[in-house]
Structures are given as structure tokens and as C-alpha cells.
Amino acid sequence: MKLIPKNLYVLVMLLVMVMIIAACSGQSGSETTTDDTATTAEEEASPAEEEMETEPMAEVTLRWRTRPDNQAEIDVYQSVSDDLNANMDSVTLVYEPGGSEGSSYQDVLRTELAAGTAPDVFWIPGTDVADFATRGLIMNLRNMADATEGYNDDDFYPGPMFHLTFNPETGNSGEALWGLPRDVSTFALYLNLDLLAESGAPDPRELAANGEWNWDSFLEVAAAIDALGDDIFGYGQNAWWGPYGYWINAAGGGFFNEDRTACGLETPESLAGLAFESRIYNELDVAVPYGEDSEPPFLAGKVGMFQNGRWATPGVRSSANFSWDVVELPDGPAGPSNWLFWGAYVVNANTEHPEEAWQLVQALTTAETQGKIAALGANIPSRVSQEALDAFLTFTPPANNQAFLNGLARNPATEGPLWAGSWPEYDAIMGPAVTAVLNGDMTIDDYAATICDEANKAFNQ
Image (cartoon, rainbow, N blue to C red; front, side):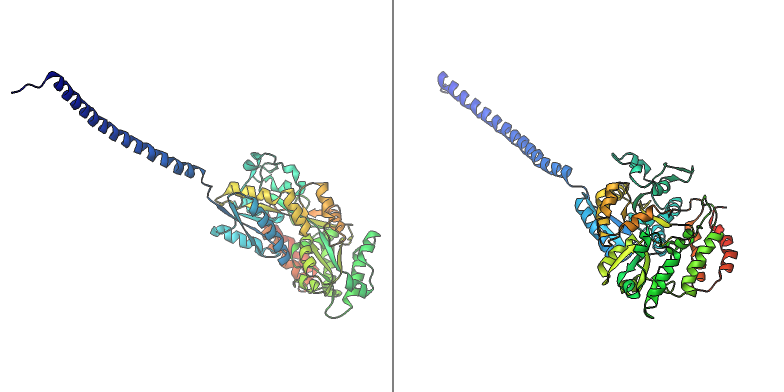
């Protein structure tokens, strides 16, 4: 066998080694490719993970409700809702107008709360705060408020805040927070100036300026307007506790005793106020029949003086085709009188979005939002601010906006809940009895003989 030359042998071995190295390099390349593929997959996954981390929060839908007086006021709150909706991140607001005056609005809410279908945030009258709170229907917002930078109870009128911060377990105010006041309001008489001029009666605004606007001059004006025709009425009010409460209060009486722990409807002063109002309907017959809604005939130009709150202003602005203004309520035997009305935005105790609901309550009660509502005429801002009151005076018509502000200083009875009893039960006893008197179906003597025996059943025994 012929031997391979040494130098050729070395060359062959070098070639073999190169092939082996190349083969190994191929495997190494395959492993590198696999590693590169894994790295690429990780790099491709990172943007997806980052996208998941930066994905916007799920949209929260909050339903909220007020009790508007008319379509014009509905439009006011829908506008507010639209403006807030545009500025609240990840929250969609749905505004739901509720029923009109009377307890049916609150009754509907109680039914919906029991069924789990109530809105997240809703407005209730000041009278009903205790009932909703003690039944566990609304949320105590105290902890969230205390953790909110810049929040202060003192930014709002103290009358409403006494009740909104009342702790029924300790009897102390300032320890809870059941909501925030949407507004304050007082009564005024809305005047049809055209009917007033036609009747030749004195102008109530001039009488008020001269200190001559009282129950006697009120009757004179009402009778003169009423004499214009069978379809014309001198006066109108609606059938709920506020209007008839004014006549009782202005005579020196009231619904309750001084500490609001018992009925006060049978005092001589309370009976005198109701008796005077009864004359308007049953003896002098110068008013829209009691129980009928007086707002439509007023807007139709058929009522000379219509007793209502600031909340009626948007409807009058949009619907009245006659000259109109407002005047303070006339002084009664006990002097000037009015109501300090208020209501509060509260949070459904079973809302699925408590923090967002609290955010909405704050947004609905900011100075800016209250300014928009006041500009549209619905109410007076509930925040303590002279600047806000000065601005309120510029929102016309009516020209005599001062009449509403005067009501705040004319010995108003503050609307408030019954922490010592049940306001809904009390109202359910008082309202029908007063209606019977004003419709001529019950005498004052029969009313006096039974009213407090029945009404005291609404207090905690």
C-alpha cells in the first residue's frame, strides 16, 4: 500500500478539521437562531404588554336625578350634565329628570332603592335627609370628604349643613356627611304685571318698598285682579306643605314645637294662619281652586299672583307672554316670614361606584356649576359667597331678584328633616287634613281637635 506523503497527510487532516469546525459552527448557528427567535418573540410581546398597561380604565356610567319643576328646568340640568360629562374622565353621565312637587318623587326613589334600580346620585329635599339616612338608603360620605383636599363643610350655608352632618347615633352635628346642598331658595310672589295694571290695584312692589305689603293689602290686590273675569284668578299656590306652611309661619305658628320633637299645628298662631288661608279659598274665592296646579294658568296669563320658589323662574322666562316680575311675600301678623328651602345631592348607599359618585356630587356643587344654574334662573347658590349673591342679582328677568335674597333675611323657617321622627309620616297626616280645611270639607275647630293627636304618632315614642 502506497503511503501518503507526510505533507499531503497534514493537508487532509486540516481539511477534515475545518469540516468538523464548520459542522459545529452550523449547530451553534442553529442555537443562535433559536435564541434570536426567542428574543424576537419577547421583543414582540413587550409592546402588547405595554399596551395592556396603558389601556384606559373601563368607562363608568353614573345615573343622576333631580326633581325639576318644568321642562325649562329639565333643560337647565341636562345642560349641566352635558358640560360635566365632557370634563369627567372615564365617566359617562346619564341625567334623569324625576317627578314634580310632592312626596311621589321621594316615594319613587324609595321603591327604586329597595328594588336596586335607583340612580347612583340623586337630589332629595332637606325634609327627607333624616328618613333616607336612618333607613340606610344613602351613603355617609364623611370619610371620603375628609380625605378630599380642599373640601370644607363651612363653604356652605350652616342651616343645611347642620342637618347634612348630623349623626343620629350620637345626636351631634359635624360627624357625618349625608350629601352636599344643591341650592337654597325662598318663596316670592310671581306677578302678572299686565293683569295688575288692568285691575288698577296698587303695585305690590311699591307697597313692599313702602312697608305696606301685608295680608290686608294682599287681599285687596287679589280681589281686584280676580274681579277681571270668571277665568281670572287673583292668587294661586300649589298643594304641598311649603305654600300653606308660609301662612302658618307668618301668623307666628309652625309645624312643630321649638325643638322639633312634637306637633305644633294646634297652637293659636298656627290655627290663625290656616284660618286666614282658608278665607282666601272658601270665603273670598279669589284663588285657583286648592289642589289644582296653579302654574299652567299663571303661565297662560290667568293668575295675578303665583306663590312659588326660585325654581319656577326658568319656566316663567320661557313661557310667559306677558310682563312679569316678583315681590316678597306679604308680612303676616308675626311680621316678615318665608322659607329657607334647600335640597341635597346624595349618593345611593348601594352604588357600585362610590368614589366616582362622590366626585359627581362635588362637581354638581362647585361654584362654577352653581353659577351656571343660577344664571339660568333655577336657584340661589348654596355656597356662602357674597360674590355669588352679587352675581345672582344680575341674572334677569325677573328685574326684582332682590326679593328672593330678601327672603333669606326675613325670618325664614329653615326646611329640615325630623331626626326625632318621620317627616314622610308627619306630612302624610298633616297634608290631607290641611287640604280638607282649604277645600271646605273640614272646619278649623274639627281640625284643631284631632290634628296633633294624629301627627304626634310620627315622632319616636
